[in-house]
Length: 129
Image 1 (cartoon, rainbow, N blue to C red):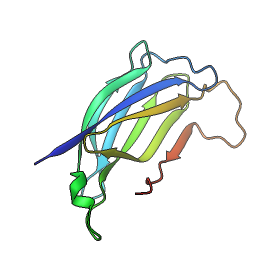
Image 2: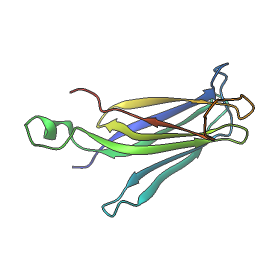
Image 3: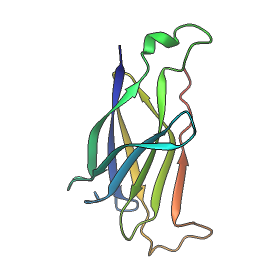
């Protein structure tokens, strides 16, 4: 039976933590050929929230024995809004039956950053199980 988890994305201005209305939130996953498949495209509301987004995830019971699949699915998340750096999250983990909230602080382009690209990349490390 197919399982799923949900993702809620909270977007805010990095220093003030004020919600950002109208940010584009893209969720994708790599296919078997390594290409990204777009699964969801949403826009944040006045609270800076996009979602919940229902995403496929493996059954947690499948991971109870050594050598079996991990109990989560990995996704990529891209959040963008004019006037802010693009935020990219790789390997965002979604567990079956779990509501995951990902906070996304966007950095205004007008704030000088030394050696900072116009994109901020966050690699999400796997949870110790």
